Length: 70
Image (tube, rainbow, N blue to C red; front, side, top):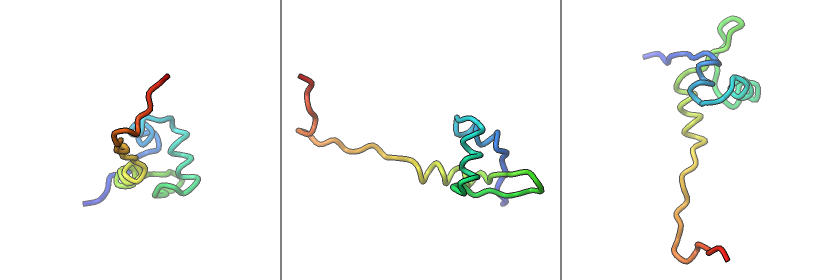
């Protein structure tokens, strides 16, 4: 099954950002994209992969490591 190709505007909406952010990702070659003539499309799997690669898990807090405010 082929990946759905998204416009830059659709990617921005999915990421909750402005259009400028996905355009910068494309410019810096930090996300996979497809050129369709003069149009740029981004596969859904590339967006999912970008989110997964940049997801930061919470750090485990050990007892005794917390400091109290004075």
